[in-house]
Image (cartoon, rainbow, N blue to C red; front, top):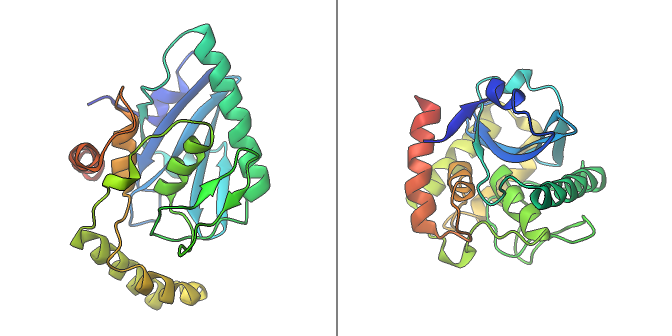
Length: 225
């Protein structure tokens, strides 16, 4: 599997690059994903860390165990470098406009990021996750990673929500307002970080749920090993 360490990413020679990164952050129990990119050879990490907490980081010390995969939609060449630079400028604009504006929610269907970088909450939804933020920001620039209509609910989705509810009740009391949200989202399909990372590894997009589920299981085993 084409999965590499953060140190290997820092050694990449292309001054402009866009990839997807995944791992378990320090002091966190859960798999997390975001967009890692090179802007004039400087590594940056864009990700929705939590509720109202979109981050653009240059210090990867807390993510030393993360892995990255080559985003196969992009390929080497001058034209692609132009597209990458354009995408990177858009990523930075989205961060500037939405640093503390994107709420956390696990059901995703209609929410989106507009072409001018504004987050628009979909009807009947509560926000985005790290995984659906990746989907939404790429869709805003015309890159459709997944066919959302193929996504299916799994009992594992609500097991994960129950664990999140328990974590908030026991340790993260300041987020008690989110408990009702997670209860309301039960029974709805969840886009897992490892599935979206799997989608980015495909040369042909959008990918469907079946492909991403299979790829995601391999990635999660690799990350958790």
